[in-house]
Length: 159
Image (cartoon, rainbow, N blue to C red; front, side):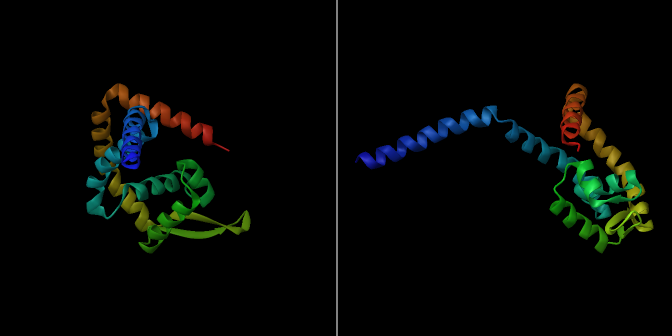
């Protein structure tokens, strides 16, 4: 008889703790916000066959012209293994290409192909619409606060 009561008490304690944790947890909220924002960007990019994660990587590559994968990963705070998977898809679609780094023959650079640059330029107006929807969803103060927090987080990661 004592064992079922003890198990029930443990579950009730876990439930109380989980409610408190969910009410306080920053990660819980960031993940929820991430899913919300991602969905706002996914819809307009879908007709181009482009995902928001791919668009982010293409943006980082386009901003540099040519870059080592480690530089791209640092720029967008992405784990190298995750970046490699995204770049593999971009390569299969012929949107990016790899080339030797003239400064270090062991290293490789990535850059947009002509097809990738054309797709990127076609995606920008769609991305801008998604950006406007995201800003509207967050409100002007929320969007600015989010941008500030993200910028601070990225600057702390810089090597």
